[in-house]
Length: 282
Image (cartoon, rainbow, N blue to C red; front, side, top):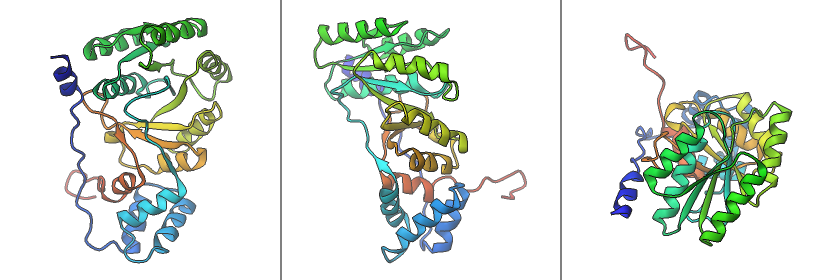
């Protein structure tokens, strides 16, 4: 019964892409990269790498070019180390934490959630998610509390997947970043950045600043609301963070999509088209 409930909760919605043009000319590909507002130097590099492969510069060629420029490293369904989700307020960390816990349970691994976010409503949200997917949840108001909670969960059930939801922080605020560093220093966990896919230069700055804390991977949320991904691509290129997963919905019924260079290429080249305004004009 419980597994059927979890399977229903985690049932993914098929990704939808518009049909790709039959002939991927360099001009057509360049137009798509420009639509996504990928910075010109990076777009030129992608075009050059794709062109060096010969043939059409379509999704396959752009995927190979992205593989040269960016890093891709999805999180495994089962976690052999606690994962601490970090990022700015409202990035979607809590929903991402629940999605990771669901993936672990469906893969046959026990899971637990830890809330280190003491903001109003944050604990209630993660407790609601934990109740829905039927995993235990612990709260931690300090680095010491967090260390104790993780140790307790590991002792109770060795090998359990532990996902930690940390407080949202402003990466431009040194005091908040110092508090986050202290929180992460209390535990042996992999910090993973969760950030909305929308954004330009600020997204790049966020990624670079969080990478300085030792972050290696990034989960992008709000892919369903993000028509232009140039800021995300540039942030990945500038920070060196590996693209792990993408979320196209805030609901835990929609799972995290493992990202690879070819899935990103499809989103860049065959995703949403130019908006149509009232009257039918683009």
